[in-house]
Image (tube, rainbow, N blue to C red; front, side, top):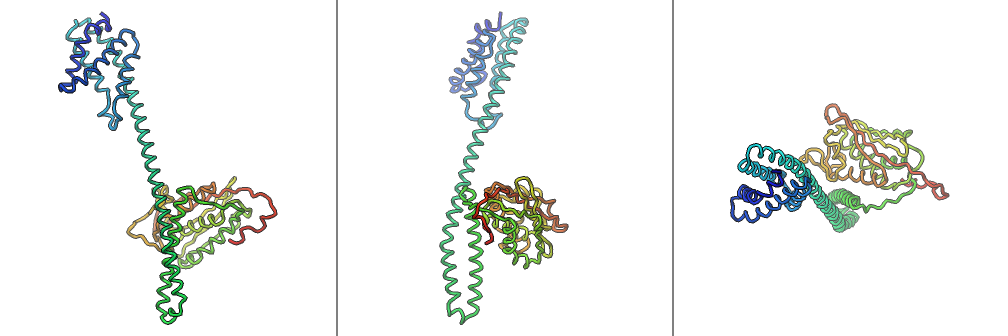
Length: 401
């Protein structure tokens, strides 16, 4: 007797044995029996037609009806298929002679082997799709959180500006009041208030810049820019910091291109100031910081090179992350010139966002971190060299820097 003939004759027995094997709970038997009947119908059609499609269709429906998996082992249907195979083996061995059992088991094993392979494949594909969907939902959730964070930062920063402006205004009025001259100590106290509000305004402006970059809302005003003038302006802005820390500042001017490019001069100046301030923080006293240019096809690589404490390799991918705090948070300091002084972690992310908005890129290199050997760091600021249209109005644009 063929396998299909034997199955057709013994299907009721097989269904009863399978239901009994799979569930001893009477409440579950009614749920199990329908699935078992459908399975044996598919198995019979496959054996009769010698075509795996009917049984594969049943297996496909099983996978589709199963809830989304969270654990491969606990939700796999392969053990169920193996259990049904075991029921068939036992029933064939009980009802058939040895010769007949061998023939039936051989034919049945071919069908179940193909079914096992097919079920494993579709379960793997289903699991992969579920993971993709979960990843997509996670990304959407993170994106919403990032947008909410950026919106909150923007709103909070703008709200802080109003009381800060009032404090600055009243402090300035008091500083210029005739009453202040009667008490010199009050003048010193108000100078301290002014210094604190100035620092607070810088942080608020940085918060607004970060939120604008995150939301792709930062406006750039492109015009002809001479990078040597930008670097000269950056040198003037940090000269006091360099003097306080006794740092040598060297600009290799012959390496900086003399031809203009198209960009926002104020924002490019901001980039140079942020990167230089970072170099000052992590370079000890009596050492040096160098600015050097390198002409590349379509770009100029402005390198800010220091011989400071350097950067650990594990930290290099994260130094441009917003609010990144490389180092011990307990040693945090808001000082802008103090060696290893901390900060809110906004300078380098702002520099990165501005450069990328110009179509360039920025990255850092370092041989490692050491407060004994001072391996230093090199920040590469890649700025596109855009051609400037020839007009009669360009003249000396940018000399205000």
